[in-house]
Amino acid sequence: MAKIFPFHGIRFNPTRIKDPAAVTAPPYDAISPEHQAELYRRSPFNIVRLILGKTSDEDDETNNRYTRAAAEFDFWQQEGILVRDPELSFYLYDQEYQAGGESVVRQGFVALARLENFSSGVVKPHEKVLSSPMEDRLNLIRACHANFSPIFSLYSDPCCVLEALARRRKEEAPDILVKDDDGIIHRLWQLDDPGIIGKAQNMLENKSLFIADGHHRYEAALKYRDEQRAKNPDFTGKELYNYVPMYLANMEDQGLFIFPTHRVVFDLPDLELTTFLEDLDVWFEMETQTVDPADPEERLRIRRHLRQKGQDSHTLALLAGGDKVHFLTLRKDDMMDRFFDPKSPKALRTLDVSILHRLILEDMLGISSEAQERQEHLKYMRDFDEPFESVCGGESQIAFLMNPTRLSEVRDVANAGEKMPQKSTYFYPKILSGLVMQRIV
Image 1: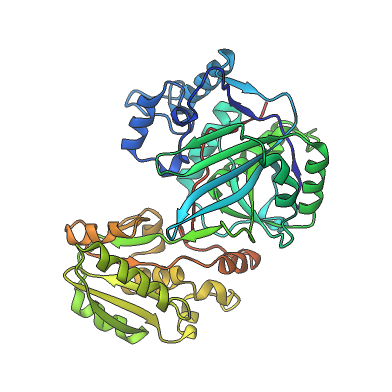
Image 2: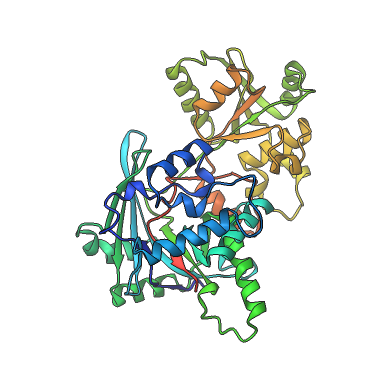
C-alpha cells in the first residue's frame, strides 16, 4: 500500500532570509495577478518566481516562465539562499487558523510518497483534472527537475499514532514560523528521528491515501515519472522521479475542514428567470426568503439557514438578483439516476455539486460539461459574500450558494473509483508554498 520516505528537503536559509513571510506564497492556483505582482515586490526570492512566474509577449521555447524558474532555482542554491538539509527527514507541519470564531490547529507532516497509478487503489483522487493546468505543472517539473509544493493527501488513523509520536518534538520551538496574509500561522519542525520515521512508515503501510488538493500536480508528476522511465528503461524504482512530496493529514484530525466553493453564471443569453424557476419547481422543493443582500448580518442568516437545511437533505441556494434567495432541496434522490451510469455510486449521484453541475447547469441551463471545464458562463467563488456582490453588481446573472462537501462523501467517491466535478472541495487552509522543496536530480 502507501509507501512514504524521509528526504533531504530544500529550504530557505534562515541566515540569509530573516522573514519567511517575505518568501512564501499560497499555492500557484490560489494566486491572483494582483497578488502575484505583490509577491514579486515583496522579495527577489519569493517562491512565486518559481511556482508562478510572470509571462511576457516575447516568451519563446528557450525563454519563458519555466526556463526562468529553473535559472532562479539554480541561482538561489548557488548563492546559498536555498540550502539542502543533510539529514533524511520528515517535516511536521501545523496550521493554526480561525473557524467559527475559534482557533483551530490542523496537524500533518511532509514526506516523500511513492507515485502510484490510480488503478492500484493506493492513491485515490476525487476530482477531475483539466489538461491545461496539468501541462503547466508538467512543464515546470521538466524545466526545474524539482517539486516546489507538496500534494495535500489524507489518510485514516483513528488512533492518531503520529500525533502522539510527534508531541515531544513539537514542544520545541518550530524551525519555521510564519503568519501569512490571511492570518494563518504556519509552523514547521524538521524531524530526523529514525525511530519515529519508521513507526510512521509502518503505520501508513497498510493504508490508502486520498488526494485532497493537488490533483493536477500529482498527475503531472506521474507523467514526468513515465517520461523518465521511458528514457531510462533500466530504472530501479528508487530514482527520485518515482516519488513526490506529500503533506499528509489524518482524516480524524479535529482541525480538518472542507469549505464550499460557490458558482456564479454570467452572459447566458437565453436565461429567463421566471421560466427557470418554474423548471426548477419540477425537481426541487423551493423555499424563498427575502434578504437584504447588502447587509452582512442578512448574508450570515442565509448562510446559516443553508447549512441547517443541508444537514439532512441535498440543498443549495439560488441567488437571482433583487431581494430573493431560493433554497432548492432535491425532491427525491433517485431523480438523479438518469444523469449517471447505473453502476455509479449513490454518493456521486447525490452530491450537491453533482446535482448542480449535471441537472441544473448542464441539463437545464445548457452549459455543457466541456464549457464548464473551460469556465464559459461559469465562475467559482470561495468567499460567501462574493456571489452577492457579483449578482447585485450586475457582473453575473445568478449565483448558486453551496454547502461544503462532506469528508465521508470524498472518501466514498474516491473508494468507488469515481471523480467529482471540478472544485467540489476546498480544503482550508491551503498548504503554504516555500516551506520545503524537493530536488528530483
